[in-house]
Image (cartoon, rainbow, N blue to C red; front, side):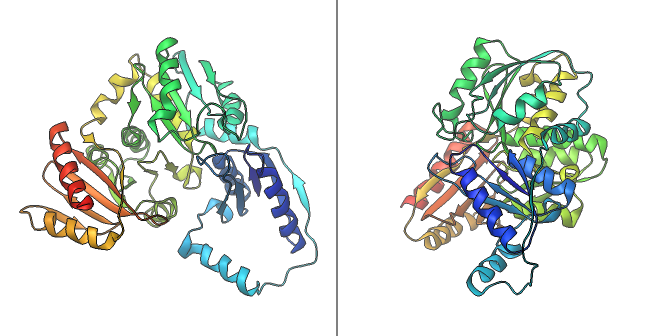
Length: 406
């Protein structure tokens, strides 16, 4: 399966990739313009490996490729990328037939059918929704999805344009959500949705124009999944809010902590049979979506929760908002290992603190925690802090940053 986003270079790369694959004797199905979760849908439904040409939320000059195995199973460093690298360097030992075939298949409507079979939206009240596609692939998928719903949609930047003329399609950066926030307030909308470039991530804005923490959406979806699957396992990554695990357990589920990264979460979901997983970065994973992530499916869960009751989004989400977070703070550090050791020495010796090294360094206090992780690609340390109060969060944040930055 090959899909491509709206970047000018994506069809060129997809064409070259298809030619290379068919030259080795394998058949190719081209699904054309697609969101990444639409590619995962195709790979899952047809049980084929997939390749999606996209640079996701990155600036216009970038491009890349996201790969999955048959059934939308993930490919990570330890689960396939090193094998691919070896084949590239040494040649593949597999003997293929001479020439493969390429065909095109439009799977958009089947993708929409599947999503709407997973979330019951038939009885929701009329809602006004602002959707910021960021000139990315949600401009292709959202019209097909929302045409079937009882919603008044105000579209922002639906035009597919890989040069991103309005703002970067990166909703994790708050500056890229300002247009959505203004539009929600201007139109008195019930909810705002923002998607990244390849539309596999979704961020929410409530009726007041306030940003919704992805951990809050994780907790909301987890409670909905547990209502359907009592006692089920739920995955959350280690820099999600402490509230996620609390809410999972309060709803009778088992909260399982994961490293950051889609390949780790998807593998842990497979190992534990978890029905749902969420990440702080706006990725949401569903067992009934082949354990793959789908921003659109997460958005539909939020819309269902809102449309089933006569209450505002902020009121619905209030029980899930229990802590104050710092957001991710990056510090350039020449010796990341030495800096991590200093943090461990300072905070690990304090009475009552718990330390673990599942992913970087996590220190848990009574009403607070923080995690520090080294970047895989840059000389950076990434800090996330959470506490019960603003003052406590700021105190911990400033102490850790002072240690990191000397």
